[in-house]
Length: 272
Image (cartoon, rainbow, N blue to C red; front, top):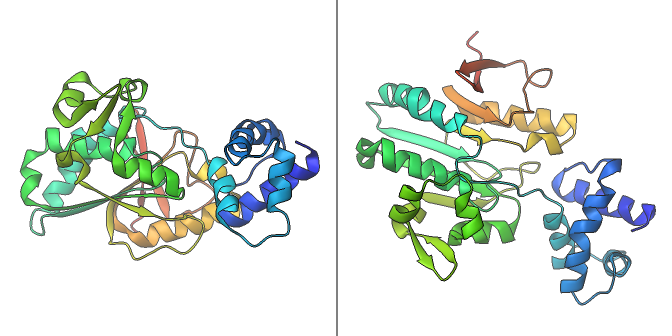
């Protein structure tokens, strides 16, 4: 890939997703776009770029943008946030919502679905009394391909080995060849929607918990501020925002305050 081709690719990705590809990410573009070029019957990334240049946005442009989005995830990723939810945050919110018996949870940038399914498993296993509540668990993703994978809930043996306890695998998944597929009891707990965080958002209900982990790191400062501003409007006054370990609201949105539960850091809207 030439420097000019990389510049074109990162302009396309920035315009369509607001994701910033730094100068040192050319190797990543090459690694992800060459397989895409070959699937499209092209012999090189240069041929791929030629097929993109000067044309209206179409499916191939979208495939390039989706190929450049990071989709690293696993069941119960990082573990500690889920422990904080189980031991402190969900019990607190259940007391506060005892009269309305409603909870809204949003897994933003859900990739292939392991995070929202982990949340659903947490609710099913540790809070059986919530069955009688109105629980809305929304999962959103920019990539249509990833969202289709998440909706299907089908995972390889390697994927279920990453963080999913064997007891839950046997209870909530069925084996199909070498893969595992979510049972309807689990799959029906999650509502999947396509959503580009950097563009306008569809109507969403006021949220009690928002997980937007390992997403903001890919955006520029102004986009981060804009996203956090919209999160602040959506999050209930006593709700919780989870970001990735390398992410913070500091110097981006001072309306948030940091809250710590053992080894887990999350954020709430300041009460002034």
